[in-house]
Length: 272
Image (cartoon, rainbow, N blue to C red):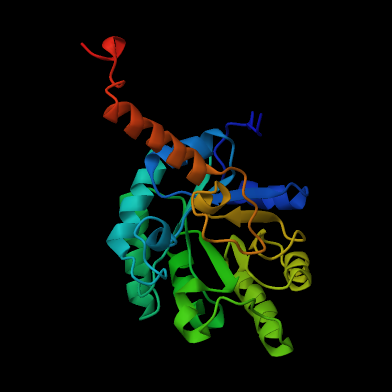
């Protein structure tokens, strides 16, 4: 049997900080719809990320860039309806916070008012710091995101590990401190060397969540479809599959087709 939390109190940004202080690891997964969110929340997850990875997982796009503000709000509203305990964090999609501080705050407020989510996540460091400050000043909790930032994939040109070179590593450390000082309640580090991620987690007081960033951080996040084995074409080193739902679902659908074709479904007990 898996981990089912007996603590049904709502997870808040303050509770995440308390978890870091006492050395309790933070669990985080993505969800994009009511049904999955209710299952993940019921299992005891601490944080649910309504990721812009919905662009890939739900819509089949090659990158996260195409997903729109209204589409993210739709997914966020669906998730929030299925959650009782977890902290729900929503990605601000590409183009909604990079143009101006005013536009960033306007879009952030719209997400929060319409979706009823708990917090937002933005990718980037010093370059977007003014927008982050304005959003936090508006009373909205912000989770930062450094390292491999998928919204900048066209600039990077690759999904390879980031911050392996000294200059980029030093900028990442600097950006982490800037985000903490600006008031971010937490930070995601994606696909960077484990030693660097551990250093950042020790230097900042806010919780650091890793994805492909080793075990020396304060918690872990994965895309739910990946860890459940629904997407069998994606196998990065950091991914551990906890199920093989691709095979399970394929088998179930195959049996259903067979039963329909053979007139075995529905039987006498399955009709009125």
